[in-house]
Image (tube, rainbow, N blue to C red; front, top):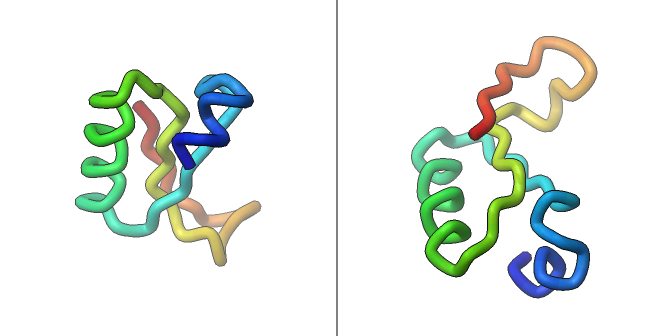
Length: 56
């Protein structure tokens, strides 16, 4: 994803993770390399209804 975030600007990139630990690690890893895309913890199967969304 980092290549796309560099080309598009990290503010235009979103990553979706169902697992809270994976989302936290993704957020940390991305920030380490200077990228700040939106990291959402949610179940993609439930998109549009019933998603549990945490960002940051």
